[in-house]
Length: 95
Image (cartoon, rainbow, N blue to C red; front, side, top):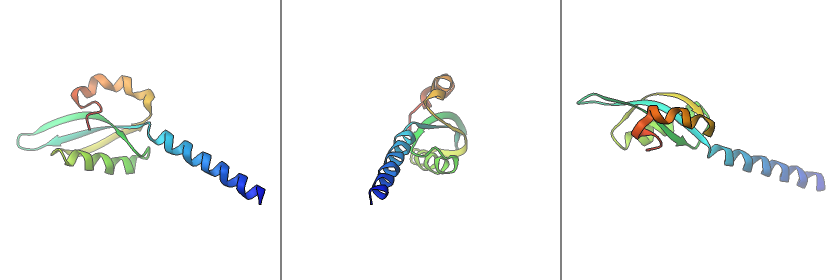
């Protein structure tokens, strides 16, 4: 019984660690608007560090502002923020 409880405690700690690190995930993306054509590159914080799930989240957030997602370039941690800030300009952590 003690072994089961200790195993569950370890599993809970691992799950909490994964949830905390998911908050430190970011995606850089390219998006567009039509009529007139406008393009932008941006960076946003996402809930999932997986590229597929991040793509869905980014597309949904952008759609609310009239943008269409073209591509999620990458998903990364906080260590990649500084080198992308200048390129993203006003779309850095905007959405």
